[in-house]
Structures are given as C-alpha cells and as structure tokens.
Image 1 (tube, rainbow, N blue to C red):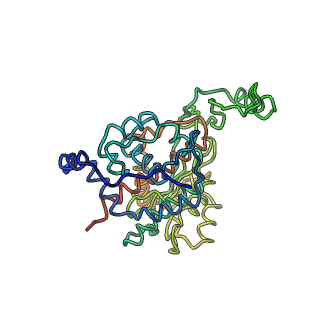
Image 2: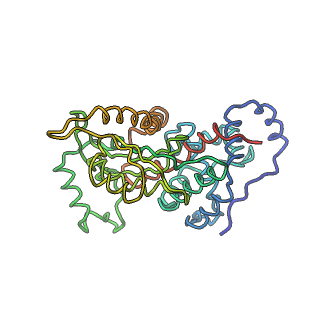
Image 3: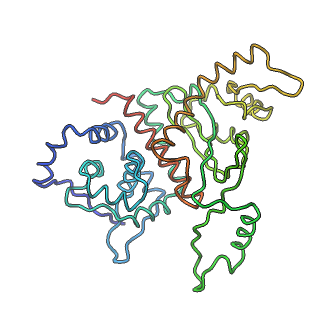
Length: 353
C-alpha cells in the first residue's frame, strides 16, 4: 500500500511563516509533545492493526499516523465535528506543522476522518495507548504505585426513549426487514438503542457510563470503557484493574469509592496481592468505626484525581454527552481522548532537551 507523501521540503512561504510562529504557544506545546513521544513505535502499531482503503479514484491513502494526529488535534482544541476539523487544519498553520503538511497541502476531508475512525479497532487504539504509557515509564515516570477507579454518566446523543420503545426497536432491528433497506443494503441507524435508563441522585438519566482508572502519581488515564448507564460500577473494578497493567510492574494499590465496596472486589484485590483502597460503607446493623471514617477521608484525597479527569473532559471536550449514536464510535472517541489527555499531561511533566 502506498501513502500520500507528506512534503517536508517546505517552500519559501512556509519558511517565511515560520518566523511569525516562533512564539505561538500551540506550536510550542505540540512540538514538546513531538519531542517526548516516539511516533515510529506508534506508527508501527497502526500499520499492524489498521486496514487501509483507497479512494474511488484509486489515489494513495493518507498515512494512518497523520490521521491519528488529526484526532489528537480535535481533542486538544475542542473541535466538535469532523467537517470543522478539516476546516481548522486548512486554516491553521500550527496544525499543519504538527501534522507535517506544507502550507499548500490540504487537510484530509471529513469523510476520510469518518472512515479512519470506523476502520481503526478498539484493540488497536488500546495497544497504542498502552505503548504511549510504556514510553512514559521508560522516561522514569511511575504509573503503578496506585490507581483510582470511578465512573461517570454520559448523556445519549439521541432523544430519550421509554424502556418499552427501546425493546420494541431493538427487536425490530434483529428482523431481516429491520436490518436491510429497500435495496437490500445494511441500514445505517441514527437512533441510539445501546443506551438505557438509570436513576442517579433521584434523577432519571438516559445514556452511557464511562468507567476509568487513573494513576495517582501523575494523573495519566490508564483505562477507559463504555457501558449502558444501568451497569453497576462495582462489577467493572476487575476490568479496570486488568486493563491498567501496561508493564511488568505490579499495581500496588487501588482506590475507589463506596460504590465498589463488597466482598467480590475485596477478594479480587487480595487474590492479586493488591492493597485494598476501597472506601467502606455502613451496612445494616453495622455502623462505620472511627478508624473506617478516617480511612475513608484519607482515600478520598486520592479519588479526586479520576474526578479531575472527568471534570476536565466535561469542561473542555463536552464528554458528558456522547458524540455518536453508536457505542463503539463513542468508545473510540474516549480512547482518542485518553491518548490526547495523557500526551498533554506528560508534556507538562517531562523535560525535553
């Protein structure tokens, strides 16, 4: 497979513009990110797992690394749609510089972004995020001292439906008539039927739930997963722990709130020789002891780290609402957000030559 060549022989216009960009903070930040990450290792994973297509005209495809970097820009600069991403790349020299595009080279179009998102698997993106974290550890950063686990609700991209209507439409989609259009081609659904209802703080919520683990030393996101909102937080603790292993070093301690309290999770941590940092809660006939109350207070000081990730995602990326009606696309969006968040955080921690 041949790829479009990125023109690194910049023109006189490119060189002239370089002077005016010298003090651009966006460029400075992205150049620092380029300096702390080995993109060749990321690209090798992309080439291993990504299925490249060709345009109708048979022209060469864009390099997958360039497309991945486009999605990082989308996360860092809070660009809400793929058409807007295309426009911004064409308009902003700093973006082209990060992507390796010369001034007169055009951005990939928004349909290319959509195809890339569909063809890149969750498995590939998870491995890429793991590779990034492994690179951080090779630079002396520890990510296994402790992890904080929590979950947050994500509003559906679709208008809410009743449970009865959700069931009816799901059943319809499973019929031959519900899967194909009048031309016999697979239907493209715009209605979210993977979300469901849950009551939170005495209020009904229709949507999804993001489960995440964050390292307590530096605040890197180690794992993220989406489920329907009714899924109990507690049962995802083992998944979040398992997905947070990115090196041979063991995870030493897991912090979580009272929603994760229970014998199954305590036994899981004990079996894996991980220190239990789950907050205790009172049970029928058994109030918390003074020691347990003080212990909960100490644990809450670590839990703010994962809440900080959720808060920043809400504030800057509008991650409290799903972008797509399909859970898989939203899961990919969360994985892109994880990578962007970790790279930006590392750029503020690591020193470059």
